[in-house]
Length: 601
Image 1 (cartoon, one colour):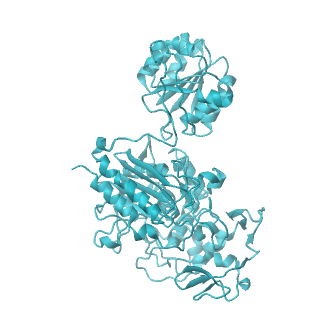
Image 2 (tube, one colour):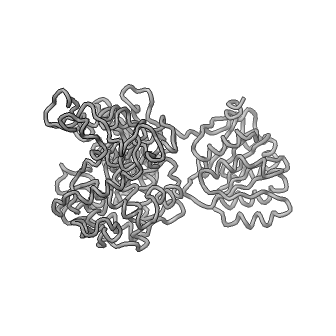
Image 3 (cartoon, rainbow, N blue to C red):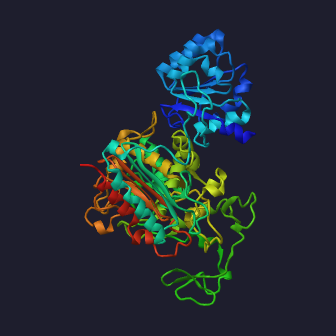
């Protein structure tokens, strides 16, 4: 009966695209026309759990006060729970003429027949037929992009709608815009399809999601393949990917830019001023800019996890240059790992507890202070000169600085300052706390270090042993959310109706380039002099900025052409030690090339 009731929910029109709601726009108010607030509460509560929404109860005796309260709002949702709607007709009609208004009828369609002019002028009209609690929650999920609806009218609605009318709302099939509307050729752009499918055939990745925006509009948005080569779970619109080093810009750099914007530090400040453990060490003179440009002298990589391994359990050591009976697992050319080793119980447990709360795999838990041990290891690692050397350690230190200045964990800071207000509902560190495992794309089938499949746990070892929240990796997200962050940079700090970063800060971070490498302030850039080594297609102008990720991810923003290119995949599945066919066959750069070829001149 519940499924039939949900199937009957009918979206009759949606001229202002309120379904789903753009959660980055603030100032939404729900006006409930109901005998009592308790009857209307399930709809409000379901909305309120995801984004801030004001709530008013319609009262005939205070219509002027209701109108005054609604006058400054950006958009209004009107929920009808009572058939006594005539007294509100004039107010609702006036509101519907003035701003986007969604009219939701939690009752018989005769309620709508009593207010035809309101229905005519409303941006969105939804006929839910019932105000059962589960129906109210279901309609709220439609607005939150969490539910599917394809109901149709069985009989005409008083000259406003005819039998059979109704729109399909599908969160897995979002609206796309014609490329021609923004000066691009759709038939050329569609050539990306064959490149994406070729990548699957060449075992570059089991599946991927590609999105292109121009002038803020999604002109290309397609999912290909599956979570694994076995193909049981297809990639969907809201599938979450391990962003790997894309975390550096979509998380750590966002926080750095915000705190810089607020005058909390300068680029030439020494990091030791904010991370005191670096004082009186050879890292004391490293500046914030050194870390952002990857010119700190820190090594490219450091095996932090070895501290957690019981080395006595590894016969012949954890790694060897040649295989033997104890080292058969090939990790790289001339690198073979120990087949069987144990973890040091001082740091690692196979069961969670108050002492071991940090989960790094399905049955592996860390002591909460291991991350402190990792920072101490960074203090001790040898420096190798100040020339350019890409290093995850740089962004791990930036995370430490962010947390000291912000006074809270970086993931909490990012959620409160960026992700939640921007409506990024599918972006999170430690995603298994918020999402079912089935929604998260696996990155590795059998991990040498942690054993078993990595699905919802960050693939990067350093980020994993940081507890899953690190400056270099750990963020999981969707193409839609990554594109929204990119659009905010392209729009010089604005998303929805809010400014998140100043124009000056955005311009500084997205344009400044190192004198010694192609790198920008945290961002990667095209190598216009040596296009063979460039992470972008040769057609990409020098103004482009973005980043790539080890798991097969990237985002590139082109301010000259108002373009955003997002590519997410799990090219590391089933194993990170297979050849990198994503790079070998230039899949991403060829897609970018098609994007530029599609621009109509």
